[in-house]
Image (cartoon, rainbow, N blue to C red; front, side, top):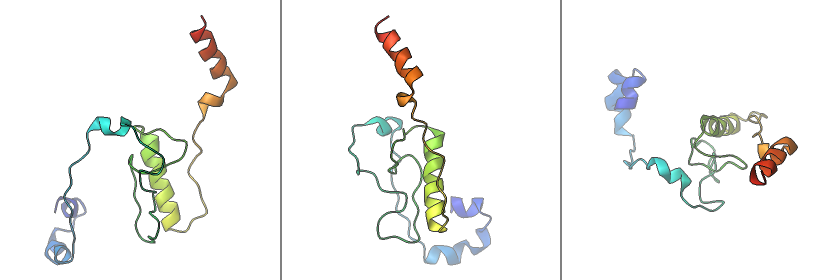
Length: 113
């Protein structure tokens, strides 16, 4: 009902709610993003077998990215939207600073300083 109110659909709420399926769930704790995990234990932005469902946010699987950033959530939304709309686009690449020689040198100097 809250979402329908935000969308300005209060007048149609009765008819919309007749066919709606709502699965209440608890929101995860803030630290749940940092719990141990394995590759593949989160769903893809477009789960296998779906053509009209996109998942987004910090609990989907994105390669080479780090949760707990706004960019992660935005990138997951871009992946889902581009795929669902059939666009041949990709979100911006993840910056891989751990491979930058200058960063490696700074890390070496810090550890051996």
